[in-house]
Amino acid sequence: MKLIQTIRQGIKDICQIWLEEMRNVFRDEGVLIFFIVVPLAYPLLYSWIYNNEVVHEVPVVVVDQSNTSESREFIRLADAAPDVRVAYRSGSIEEAKRIIAHGDAYGIYVIPADFGSRINTMQQTSVVVYCDMSLMLAYKAIYQTATNVTMKMNEGIQVELAGNTTDRQDELTTRPIEFEEVAMFNPTMGYGSFIIPGVLMLIIQQTLVLGIGLSAGTAREKNKYKELVPFVRHYQGFYRIVLGKSMCYFMIYAVMAAYLTLVVPKLFSFTSLPNLSSLFGIMLPYLLACIFFGITVSCMVRYRENVILLVVFMSVPLLFVSGVSWPQSNIPAVWECLSWLFPSTFGIRSFVRINTMGAELGDVVNEYRALWIQAIVYFFIACGVYKYQITRTRSQALSRLRELKNLRKV
Image 1 (spheres, rainbow, N blue to C red):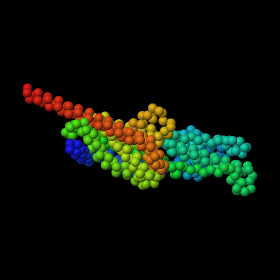
Image 2 (cartoon, one colour):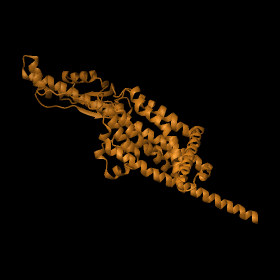
Image 3 (cartoon, rainbow, N blue to C red):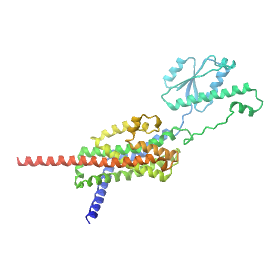
Image 4 (cartoon, rainbow, N blue to C red):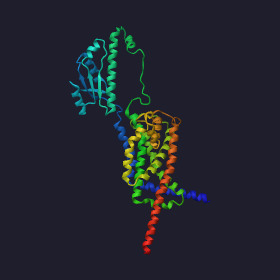
């Protein structure tokens, strides 16, 4: 009978804390922005920016020192390519560099003076390519276009020298082994399909940590932890507080996660091949790990503004160490171990494989187990955080009460 009463009281406390936390979320404009507005709007803005997937018509400068029919053919083929536009012709490299410095172009094609003569005398020649490396997509377009144009011209030279009489012979001369390039899991070879899935998962973690941190900062500034003291009748009370608050956050982010993982990729036609059961299986521990991680981090938040500085600073490094923006095999061991502290590391890796590669839950079992381990560990740490905060608040309240009693006696 006593056990049943304890369970009923525990459920009642959890529901009461959940209701109070839900009210606090919708009363606090800052928390509401990070819990609702940012997850809804930011992915749309980010996806819209990268919706074109690849860059086209990147302006380049051509320095034609040869001025022959062969150099003009190179320029014509480069300008006809979809990724590059010959925007300027310059008489010197120095002038071309000034154009790059002004931001009017992103690369330079330098055709040497002996370009045509070396081709006509059966000697190897070259084209020098200078690229502005501040924008990797532009570099890729400029470099690949130069490579493709030179390969096209090489084929023409091979055909002329072979003296073939049929088109089939020309094909065998230029391409004796037929090959076909297939981009796996990213058929458009677009930047959006490559980076957006990882960003979506990072948004879930970062906005959760921001919202929970703001709420904790507000509570600490207003000393609201004293309101939770009545629920802490024994050690289980701390579990009730964490479970009640977590239930509030989980209900909100169950909807946000479905929107981010299912709706946003479809809206912008990004590669999306998720198995719903596998996606649900990985999102459950990921959300719980992010929630308990956010509660743990909130112990370091003394003022509301602190959490914004902390989380925003961490966003870019977390994307790098996740193994999406930079190969996981090339991440130093120290940073790899450090990345295991964050749920986003395993969440991004598993979601990219499930969403983009069509993997099943069994294919990401290591990440799945790691997320459950994080959820359990951070749950107990979160309980310890609240135990410390509320115990300290109660101790300060009792100390203040004693001081008031002593003053009255005096």
